[in-house]
Image (cartoon, rainbow, N blue to C red; front, side, top):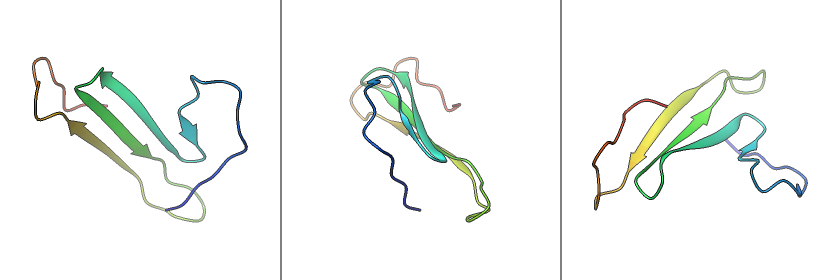
Amino acid sequence: MRASRALNSDPQSIHVGPISYDIIAPLNSICVRLEANEQRPIAFDIVFHSLENSEGASDRC
C-alpha cells in the first residue's frame, strides 16, 4: 500500500488516504490502521508496543 497527500498545515492530522495511526499510550504503543477502499479491498489494525515500558498497554485501537 502506498499513499501520499499534499503538505498540510495541521500538525494534528495523522492520516493519509486510507492509512492512519493513533497514539494509544505516548512512548508506549501506537495503532496503525488501513481502511478498505476500492483499489485495495483489505483492511487491518496493528498495535505496536514498546519493549521498555508496557504498563497499561492495550491491544485495542
